[in-house]
Picture 1 (spheres, rainbow, N blue to C red):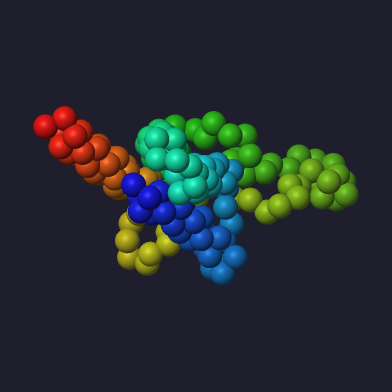
Picture 2 (cartoon, rainbow, N blue to C red):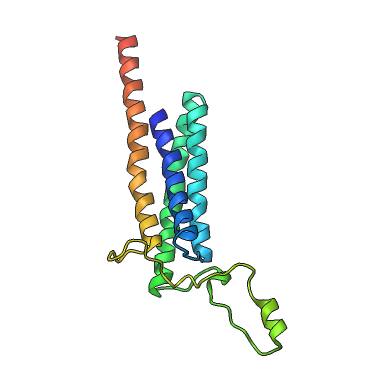
Length: 169
């Protein structure tokens, strides 16, 4: 079970690392939904750390909490893909491109966001030739991690069950 906890720390850090690399090395500007999609991976890494340091039963609880966190990550990825595809509007107001109305140049500059942003419906493709945006890849990644957590929890239960049989029998 500790190996599963370590894997969740590494998985959360890997997702955040790819986002950071994409932003600071490749120059991709994240939108509001992109920034929201990072939160579950921060929580995942934190839960994995708890799974490493807590006693076994509490660590098991921390690993169980990884499953809904990963479902939230997959949901956010799916929500973002829907926005990218134009299936629904973004729920975040900061995802819309800024519109500037009349006024002086100074008023327009004052109304600009402090940090450059992009609209959430402008997909960012990380792998050339692969028609999956970063949002889609993040959702798939989260869904792929769920069976890993379940397997780690099942292995622990399997060993626990064997130990009881030998003690009782």
